[in-house]
Image (cartoon, rainbow, N blue to C red; front, side):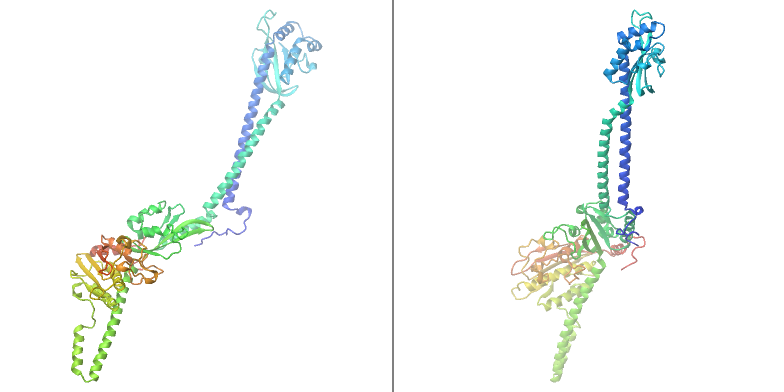
Length: 619
């Protein structure tokens, strides 16, 4: 699968291979320009029509005013009552012509024309046309009606109005009789001149709208480029395919967290590893800070004082317990160029590996015990050989008898027969040999009784081994008791699938440290060079062994030991903090195991993969 498009982003492109954001910008600019041009044209057309309408109304008003002039009405009625029409020279000097020209001069009209009842001109701006019939039909006005017109006459294109002239009272025709008509017109050029201010305002508004559209388009282009990280749609599609293939095809859990603190992606493996409760809540869009996941997992992306506030980016993986699983989690900051995009949290299942590690620790302890015993038997054999060389056969035979009675392997652990679980007996026996080599006596308490195999052998090995190791180190670092002995006492009592444990030592206790502080993740009372030693068993590793730091035999630390114990209803706690000079701290543990049926169901669930076919068994 390719993670880049077929055409690299840095390759030169032709006009037909413009970037998606550029094509989008050009399309937006074209749409904005078209919208602005159409809007401006519509506005100008409406303004033009409005000016025409206003001119028609002005012409109609002027025509009515002229037609209502008393002298004009009287003179028109007189002319209409006579036979024929006066000569042009008489009309040009007459009162009708004077009234019409006066009105035209006052209003700036193109023409004010007055006719008689036959449509012959009695007044006209061109005296040469007096006495002629008008070029447009006066029928409507001579019939007593009014009309507005848009036409081209002898004086050019115009918009005008025609109204009738009626005879006044006392005339020969009788009052109200139509004796002529008044025609008023305004030139179209004057209307176009009136459109100039509207056109200027429209052009300015269009220019501003176009500039705003260009600015918005450029901002949208930048926003689009930022959201897509400069990738083309083909590249984004390829990345989505690759993401689906990678996230669904691996057993490791992957959780993506955006810069806004919300989960952007969580694959099926992550939800499966976190368990039903936490896994279901870790979905796209969920608030990571409020997600019901282990606190140690959420802390991986939290700002760390002294680390620039950038979290644990680049730090080794942290081991934690989620439900029935032991996980190793790590977090990496995602950066594209100079832009921080968020975090990616990786989860790896170490449940089976942890069990194998604890078994290997037990085998290693037994190996050390055998090595020490071999050394001891070698010394005894040298003693026997020396007695034989001296001829002390009876003493040699007696010595061999004592060795035979001790058995092939002798644990410095009294009353080991009280432990009915052979693996637990061997484990504590090996721990006893290790403690003995450090000058510490490991002993069983008076109330110890384990009647059969423990139901949670792996958890017991982890929790009890950690407590015993801490106690041995505390006894070595602390003060011996009144008899000069350094000791660790373990008391075990089983109750069905539940194992109760108490571990005490002869050290100096935990001092002023609050007991609950010991169980906080990352807390330790030991100096870095001390390898985790802490008084009174207060050793607390910062997360336990990690992928970058293999298990050292100290277990998961008190924090993870408590988590392991609590996952089935158990716990680890401090019974007594101890005192300086001894005795030391006393720790209690309750470890709840599973019934065989529950264990079988759990093992099947742990091995069930994200798909219908599972993972095909152990990896």
